[in-house]
Length: 344
Ligand code: PHE
Image: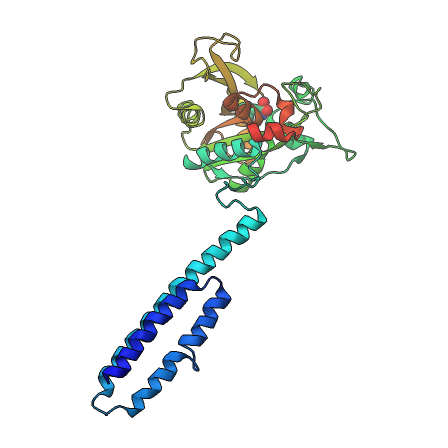
């Protein structure tokens, strides 16, 4: 019995020594066949078990198994080491430096107009305004007449219109016709909606005006909707869009579809009212037009002005993006220069 154990122990020492000399995966596999394989030396030695007295077999068998398992374990470790060495020398041969930082993939991002539009819509969503879609191509009546523009009113000329070859069909000059669509859809229910979208004006393209631009319209109608509600809503918007603690001010203005009408300024986000080049030393930046919905417009939308009141506002989206990100030329938005789109 002790003979066989001694023989196994010796074989184990020999095998371990041989294993440390293997340098490649192929050599380590050859080692496996030589010692642990079906025709290997361990297997051959264990045949001697059959000749032992039955009471000796369990003890010798147990030790034989331990040795076998130990050899399998060191083989696995050796093969792992060999694989790592082989990988390292293959990489070195190919000249690959795995410690070099990876290349950043070019990742796209939202267009600054879309980003500003989403920001604006989200702020009003939180205040309970739902998104409302309305068309870019309108009739003259929707864009002007139903919004209380008299036929010969000079305000029509303020918004130089693109006409189509179909009589009376025009490209909308503002998102305000969406007010009529929303009212006609929901009357006589209360409304709180925001309508973002493209508008078109046949104007000279300058740093301040494009032929195509985006607006967001807002409309709230209900019982007892007041001018204070408009102020609170817009103050909340200014604080979320331009920063906490922002002030706003209202200046009297004129739009045919609101009465009274106002233009709304926010205190200059650059100089906080002290006066700088951006705010032309006034301390204020104009951000939007607004007012209480004119009774004629309420009626055109299907609401009785004796029972309902409402407010509306409209803002240029690029203008908000320009103020927020310090862009001084609206033409940059649609000239598709990636250096600008990346930076903004
Ligand atoms: N439609 C107006 C414009 O384009 C903005 C506005 C909307 C003003 C709603 C008052 C109320 O200038």
